[in-house]
Structure formats: structure tokens, C-alpha cells
Length: 121
Image 1 (tube, helix red, strand yellow):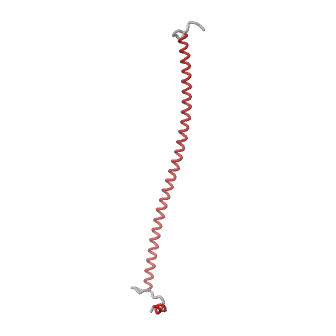
Image 2 (tube, rainbow, N blue to C red; image 1 turned 60 degrees about the vertical axis):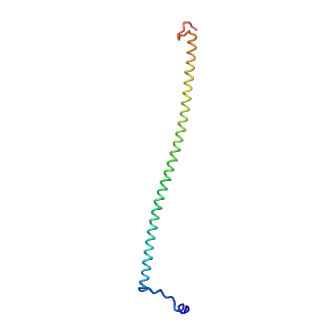
Image 3 (cartoon, rainbow, N blue to C red; image 1 turned 135 degrees about the vertical axis):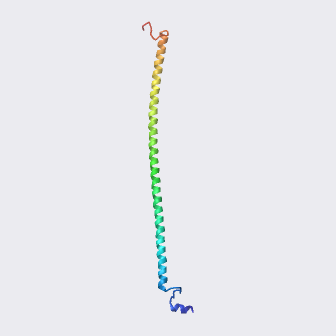
């Protein structure tokens, strides 16, 4: 019997409707699947585009933060240099005032407690 069906050729399964109607249904299903797949692909592409923009924005934010950090670092170094210069200047002023104070103290001792000495040097 198997050899009979082989010799008779392929017989499509018998279902309700004609062969053309079955093929039309198959094509409709195929096209529906195709459009659904296109819709899903479009949704995925849209989500990926959104994620790409988010990642680009995050990258830009990180870049801006790095630049701001570098700028702050340079400004802190400049402030340290200025602070050291001011500190040196203040130390010089303290030293000069200390020397003047010491010289005036010596004069007070020499003049007997008065800034104006009656004797001439």
C-alpha cells in the first residue's frame, strides 16, 4: 500500500474548503506574522534608539564631570600657590615688625624708658 501512495504522488490533506482557499489562508497567516514581526522589530529598534540616546547622554555627563573635576583640581592648585605666597608675605611682615619692635625695645632701654633720648649718640 505504501508503494501505491508513492506512485500516486503527493496528495494535500483534505480539509474544509478548496486548495486555493487553504493557500489563501496560509498566505494571510504568513502576512499577518510578517507584519507582527515588523511591528516587534520596529518596537525593539525604537527602544534601542532610546537606550542609545540615554547612553550618549550619560557619556556626555561623565565627560562634563571629568572636565569640571580637572578644572576644580587646577583651581585648587592655583589657590594653594596663592596661599603659599600670602603666607610667605605675612611671615616677612611678621619678621619685619618683630625687628622694628626689637629695635624700639633696645632704644627704650638705652633712653631710660623714653623714646626721646636726651643725649646724642
